[in-house]
Image 1 (cartoon, rainbow, N blue to C red):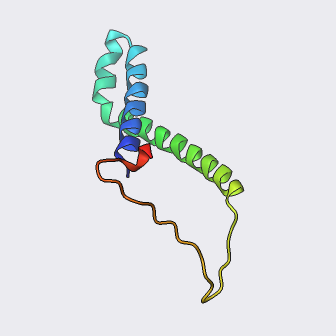
Image 2 (cartoon, one colour):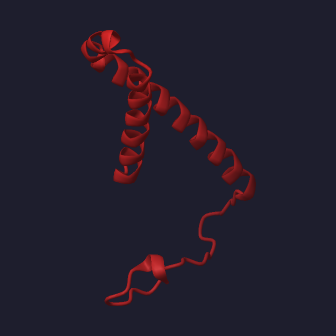
Length: 93
């Protein structure tokens, strides 16, 4: 899994967790703190579910734009092999 995705999940999970602590009274704080692992599991599961829904939505939009291609054996095709420039990152090219 990409580190940016993991960071995003961690931030979303912590936001949900902090929101639950913010609503608690001082008497409830002990109960919430003892329930921390369960709260984290629930919030991460909720974030994972939301992320997968977004990924499915993006896949659907991507699939609408992409045309399927069928090639036969021994058919000539173009192969894109971009040049590598020393000292340059491909994302800026």
